[in-house]
Amino acid sequence: MTQVCRHFLNLLDWQPDELKGLIARAIELKKQPSPDHRPLAGKTLAMLFEQASTRTRVGFEAGMNQLGGAAVFLSPQDVHLGRGESIEHTAKVLSEMVDGVMIRTPSYDRLKLFAQNSRVPVINGMTSLNHPCQLLADIQTYWELRGDIAGAKVAFLGDGHNMCRSYVRAARQFGFQLHIACPSGYEPDLASELTSSIILGNDPKSAVANADLVVTDVWTSLAHDESEKSSRIKAFLGYQVTPAVMSEASGDALFMHCLPAHVGEEVSADMLDHPQSVVWTEAGNRLHSQKALLERLLA
Ligand code: CP
Image 1 (cartoon, rainbow, N blue to C red):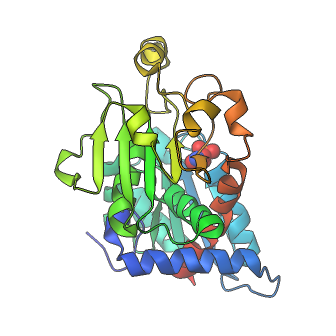
Image 2 (cartoon, helix red, strand yellow; image 1 turned 180 degrees about the vertical axis):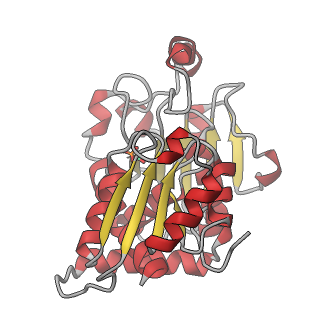
């Protein structure tokens, strides 16, 4: 096994001060874009996507270009990984040719195995367990619009899947209070990580009460079979974020959604473009926070 470099697989692998440094740098890069800032000139990022993506893919590709480097998109159908070449061999080969690898795969264990065999930094572009890059953009968005998120109350409504789990980890690293409301049977399996600041329940109203930030995610994600969709919609009724739900939060609360949204399911149409919604800024911050991460890992 080879592990000689820093990876970004899980928010808990980085110190809180390092994560805050990334957020501060993302805000700086966004405020002061400079065509002369090319710390990644001559460097290449391989992007291996085993699932679809818009924001993650474009954020990393545009980010590499803006920092002077290049990105190569790889889908399993086009490379030998999809025809039986092992993840270990793929990691060793890519390490000989590129300066970093970003992977989106459902399996966190597969991501870890890749990283253990990689001599270049590996970035988690989303697994079924977590989505740390999305959390960098979300925290950046809150910092820009409301200041430090430490001590704020965040409400997460909906499925206890990868975004919810990432919020649990982010609450620990960034010091905010997290109130989760999931239907019974859809809670995150992170009971050991719950603290007095991370509360898990089934009541959306009490989770949202006086919250500074309200977050949701799709009820049927890339990891779920579409055949589950109708039973999921039934189970999650009452967890949709609407302007009426937002009115229970603090008066200047923000609404975030990592997107893509299933309008009419987890979020109402009038919530996405509501004055308290910052989903488009949040999506745009995927670029800036990923640039800060690339600069930190590859420069
Ligand atoms: N939020 C997010 O990761 O978007 P994509 O699936 O489009 O990358």
